[in-house]
Length: 132
Ligand SMILES: Nc1nc2c(ncn2[C@@H]2O[C@H](COP(=O)(O)OP(=O)(O)OP(=O)(O)O)[C@@H](O)[C@H]2O)c(=O)[nH]1
Ligand SMILES: [Mg+2]
Image 1 (cartoon, rainbow, N blue to C red):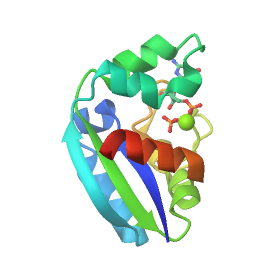
Image 2: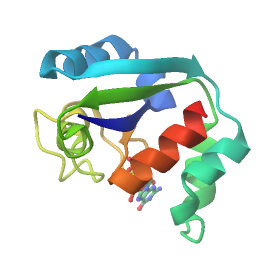
Image 3: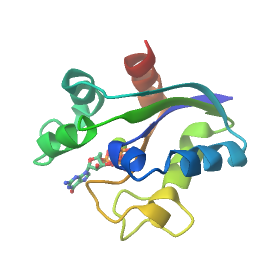
Image 4: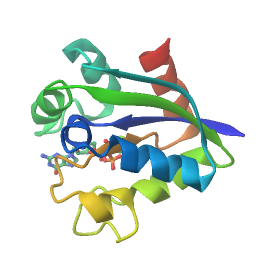
């Protein structure tokens, strides 16, 4: 069993995709261990995306993620990290395959609905950051 950090981003909440996304996660067989719906502050989001702090779009990401509520979740299941990344799909909506969350719902590279940890180390770090 593995645990991963999943976050439905503000555009996912604004577009009323919470139910659709949670349903996909549950139907796949994963278990939602913890969840909270809240508006994260700048400090938390800057720390979350610290690996991108030197990228030209860093400020854009921080403004996007802090503009409204997100649904932060701890999700458990076999190979949850890799399988959730597969279900989420590619970052670039042009490359995200139909059937993936981004492939079905995202149309912008900057606003792509959902985040999932990309490794065991990120999952551990992000779960601690968001849930303590
Ligand atoms: N504006 C803009 N935003 C980008 C670009 N590349 C990435 N982003 C944003 O930065 C986030 C983090 O990028 P990555 O970590 O490389 O992509 P990812 O792992 O698929 O996305 P996350 O799950 O959110 O970490 C993306 O989800 C986008 O919201 C870009 O070229 N332009
Ligand atoms: Mg990433």
